[in-house]
Amino acid sequence: MNAAPEEITALVGREVYSSNGVFVGEIEDIQLDLDARSVTGLALAELNHELFAGEVDGSTGVVVPYRWVRAVGDVVLINDVIERYDTGDSEEEPSELAEST
Image 1 (cartoon, rainbow, N blue to C red):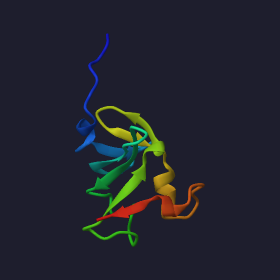
Image 2: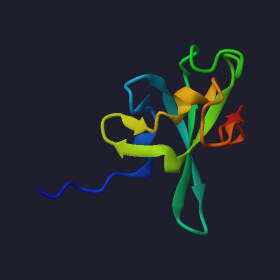
Image 3: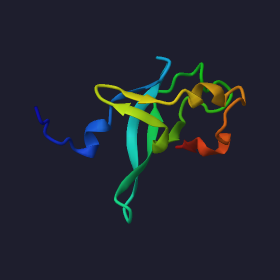
């Protein structure tokens, strides 16, 4: 059965979880590259404060690179690299996780 394509704005409000099932945050906005017509990042708010303790305050969100996304459905799954962000074990540079206001 072919499902109708969804609007990109349908992602706003969806919860984001790591591939290990840890809640990361909720999508507040989408970062786009208009020239390439592609999604480049997901701006998250309502963050899991345990993951970002000491990194961002309550009024700040983060932008997760879209290449970390593994699956999109009722929720969005991202690589578990976000869980390693705080410990420094990440293969990705921590600077890739951009703060948004």
